Image (tube, rainbow over all chains, first blue to last red; front, side):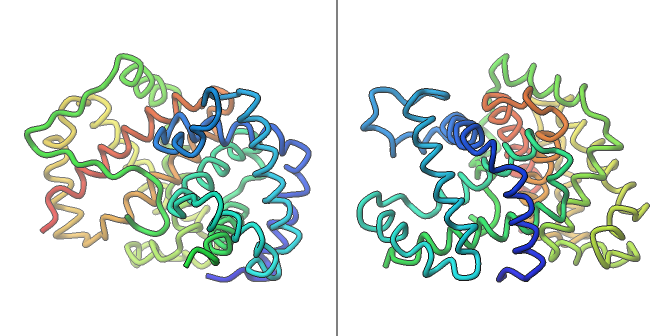
Length: 143
Length: 163
């Protein structure tokens, strides 16, 4: 399910609309994730507390959205473009790759709440394909 | 777990009741009272057919599903989307016995419609996104958790009679 030119154009267009809100998106997506999928909190056990909207969540949200921004810029070759991030997730963070689609879903839900007009079914399918591609590229170095 | 969906897998045996908190009951009823079935249903089904185009396999008799615009404007898709919402309404009115409420529907989807039960989760995810778009800020993490738990019970019950 690789990205067509139409998909890439749709992702770039949507990103240009939503990127000014990327801090808010990252914060909401992660805050939502730990509430809807509480098992994901285990990855943050080194924080003093894992609660929605905390300073840790906000900072981490910025990091995650920075990664998405990088992925948009490397959309023509996600595997190469996200190589270092994949190594980090594989060897240092060791996040089970099943969780990538959980966070992706939360990102989609947040975008739907914040940009209902722009997040048409056509934009949705391209963004879903893109985020699935990001997840695949992040898992590349796992084994 | 199927590749695409993130709705939870439930293991509700027939002797195990799903327990709902007051917040969950109120939230689910509130959501369904706030949304228009003939808007949300068609939007969710349309989205599912566009985002997961292989689900079109079940709608061979629906005519033109050639592209997103055709799907959006297809009256049979609209009608079926509304039908789905009324089906969910039965679960909302029978939160403590969704499994039995859906016995016949489960048999129908298995034996007559031959729907892969993994596809129920894809529609559930699309419905979550459509409801999120409708409710905006009101669709908090806690509300999302309650709504997705409800859909997970629905999906599990619909898959129960497959053999």
